[in-house]
Amino acid sequence: MAAARAGQVLLPAALLALALSPGPAAALPCVADCPAGTFVESAGCRRGAGASCRQCPAGTFSSAAGRSACKLCRKCEGIFKYLKECSSKSDAECTCKDGYRCSGDGCTHCDRSCGVGQESTGNGCQTCQYGTFNDQPNGSCKNWTKCSTNQILEPGTAEKDVICKHASVNPTLATTLPTTSLAIPFSITGPGKDLQTDIIRIFLTVAGLLCIVFLLPLCICFGVWQKKKLHAVFKKMHITPEQSIQEDDTCSCRFPEEEQGEYQDRGESTEFRDFLVN
Image (cartoon, rainbow, N blue to C red; front, side, top):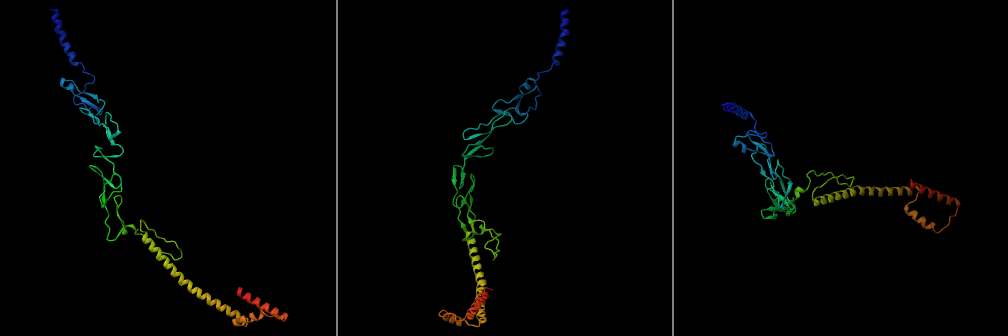
């Protein structure tokens, strides 16, 4: 009888203690917000227990909080190589090996690298067709520039565009050509060598004409001045050019007769020489 009473007293106390005892330390509500790199294990919710956070296993990742599972990491194999390794919080990033280039969003596939004058197609690299060009590696072919009739300076190829004559000369070309210097103050960009040659020829022709116009009158004036000066010398000596020639011929065959005449001849010669020098 006493034992039955003791059991009735202990049973309610045991039930009260069980109800007040805490659950497992890692247990969380079923709506637990687990951080990135983990996932929510909700198996305990079906048993009435709280959810728990578990770390993502190797080779998997969880990039956001509250994920119910981790995703498998991407593997960079074959013509791919790792640009960034996988971690528990982010996926791996791949790129293409040398000789290939990435295509698609996130480098989902690789295409063979194409050089200048080519473009990539589904079957590899293809040379640009006639009328198109590509001057950049791994670029696409573009149409040639259309020039006016007979205005093509350099024809186009698969590697470079057509060059038109009107597009090769700098529109800010200086046209001032000074006559006091041989320097030509203009610059030409591009392959417009024909225009540069024509301008040089015109400049040299104009310079030659200017020299003739200025130097010819100077030569004529100098000749007239020399003739007048010589005539004035002979007039001052009271002789003519013809007489001086005759006297030179006769003097070469005789000796001076008087000393006074010798001094006179020397004085006239000295005077003639001084006049020419002055």
